[in-house]
Figure 1 (spheres, rainbow, N blue to C red):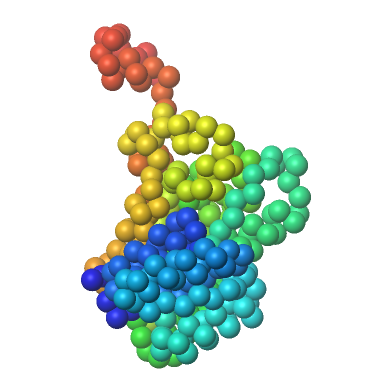
Figure 2: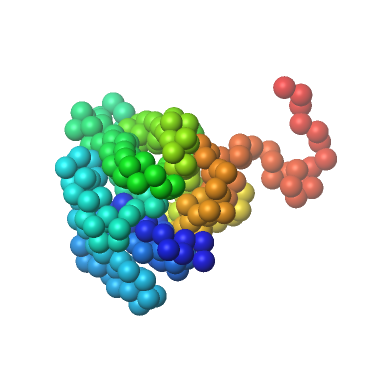
Length: 270
């Protein structure tokens, strides 16, 4: 098992990608701290599923954008399990609004939950690892929105872009302490939030994804566990795209002709 004997803290783990990461970490042998902010029922369900796998798990409510709540969570997790070896910074929000209609509250809340939380949680866990002279791993859940623009999501894109460089900068500073820091950047993933907020989801995304479908939370969770594990012990400061080829593809209006062979007319040179 990739995480046998490890303790993993997953923020925002009551639903969606975070819940799948928590379950996958447990399947790979980890004891898990399931963080949530509002969905207590979902977090307790995830915790119960982990317990059925025969692994330890606790639920902890915390707003990860608040320093005192983060420190209390890390303290409780360490008291319960003795250490925290793995931190998965998964908590995030996406508030859709055109830039010209954007208000300061939207901007501040998005940056606090998506980016400030990475600083607070990572520092709290890393300080304990350094004090104990223990190696560890931090994996940040970024987004394709940290690579290029998503419509009506300026604060979200800014937060994920910030996470990209925070990942690299933390990786460099924490490397001497044997603490690795990496990020996963998911593309379009089939979670309930997307189904409830995006009309036509997931079908409208399919033409833009070379794999021809959106991804599943489990397909994000497995690479996260890999990066958190000792199988990736020489990997740090990296961003892994889990997007079915989305960020590698530039849609071309005429490309279907070339794919189907319906036209042998060469494209005009640019």
